[in-house]
Length: 109
Length: 282
Image (cartoon, rainbow over all chains, first blue to last red; front, side, top):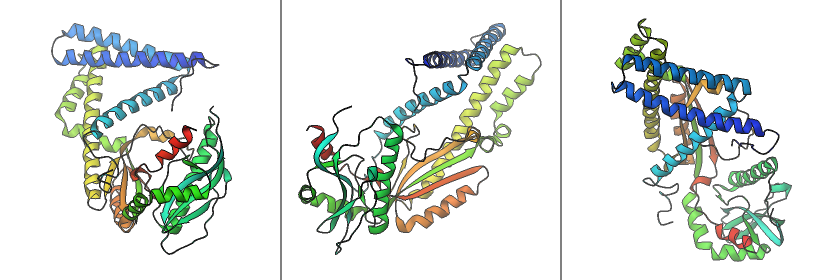
């Protein structure tokens, strides 16, 4: 499991990982919203171009920051952990409609 | 850390059916302690003598203990058949007589669980697929991807627009790959369902401690998980399961990992939990 160290020798890396991961998630959300607006025809061609340029710059800047700080891997790991958490929650919701392990054997447990 | 010492106790590994047997059985258990088997009528309970709980902050030590616990349960399974495993660090306070007393109190449940689980084992299946195999032919069959490719290649679009078009392309590709993966996983599950008692998706979060201490493989990045399953099946179905998985493994770009038989950890009722509360309150 990824552990974010914000209180030791690696405090800076830990904090940078956390901040950059959160910024990446924010940019992902912005990109999804941009695509939604683009697909719905709400934006002119000029607006699409401007929005795309800004988001591309933002993404390139985050990539550069990760490389400079040497935190590519730790950001990936943290994102993986967060995805895992979301998957778990989704599974838990699914499981509430399904049977628990052992249901076929111990029906009254 | 809490005080982990106790006056006298027995660390419990598992219970197993030993009809008409009074076997000698001892292997090396948790923290290198020798185990013993306490026979109680037709049930044997495998234990070791202890005077402390197994509580540590050291991950390597905990991993070693978990592995040792698992090895004992595996050895019991190999010798006597499907065991009823207890959770790690299940301890009963007192001596062998206290274990017998507890086993008599739980005799009905123990016998019922062991009878029901007889011959049944747990199997784990991991199926990985190479990304390029999952993507193969998608663009040729999907008009939306073709349209996006045309627009991206259209020299009239600026860099910003192309950036968003590529995002759209990747999003669409991811959706199609997910559908293809789900479909293949569903097909496998359906084939296995006829010869198994239960099939469950295994947690993808991987929070448990990795007992094999593998560091992963960089090449994993080029593959994705098709499905991770835990099965409960009778041992005489093992070959049929293997045959189905051979078919799957023969598909291009697919890797299958099939492990087992394991003691049915996932499918065992939570027996012995009251023992943990017993020592936790003392």
